[in-house]
Image (cartoon, rainbow, N blue to C red; front, side):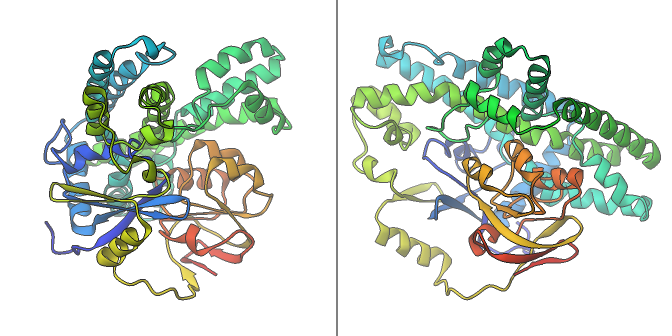
Length: 468
């Protein structure tokens, strides 16, 4: 590993969590992902923080893994990368669909075990899809920007913007296009099929509810000029595709630079597509955890906080983990060199926090720094968005502050004066959308959503930093 980076914990991302929700990570810390065993780390720390959980990795392990992952991506053409993604995600979906809307009460424990083993197998291959967006943001995108500046410093920014813009609709955008067509036609009988096709879009964790017909009707009601909105969405992708093609023609890249360009551009689409596949799977396998809960006479949220081997132990021997009921209230995880520990008591979690991160002194923070994604300086009142359910509260002209954004944030993002995210980089969802909307954006602040509170009056200076 490079001595350029320290062997200290750094916060990489924050998420709402159940233990099953994070089981996609274990391949990265145990055997390595099946496609390439060198893609592996040795340590993970997960600590509760407000309504989310903070995920920490050792800086040197994380950067070493991202460099290896970047090399792995560049060793393939974009067609090979997308084919590999589709094969692993399609297999993942195929297995998940086997329990969707099935009467699992009639399945034997043996049949449930057989399905769960298949699920874990396809899960392990899909786990490769987890970290490439970080490799793109942290390693490949800065490298690309540097290479473009060597070709033509004056055109580099415009080229990079064209390359890092999405040229095909993600599923949320396609849903919006399809919904607008229904609204314009007035044929609301089509809404039933629309719900079946897209109801899973708001689901990001086990236990979250799918959208209903009423939810889609509310989305339509928010759009004043549906014909104009539809035209703009369709034309936007045509325009961005044209700009991307023009950039390639002007750059005249070498084979290596072309692969770098195409890989960064591919992940403007795949970063959302991988999450969408994950959302569909969560929606389809929810029933499995309800069935485990029914058989064990526990709550579904308790079943979602079992480790994989604990689910197998229950189905094989009817053994429940002793602390399962406490885990849903709070838990912390430490994984280091093959040893995994879970903590559920407040005093043990705080002791772990101090042991691993040291004493944290709370001082008033005046500045939060990040990576500017779209330039501009704006002052305004903060609206902290912790879950998609908070989005309707965002008022016109407020500054949206969140851990990260995703396609279901777009309508609210249009109302914001600026965007600030804890995570992401210059090719993240927040960055791409802010450039489209031409509103200032600062990503990768790490602590923005913890430092700022709804109602704070702040200045977003996307020229250099974010100031309170």
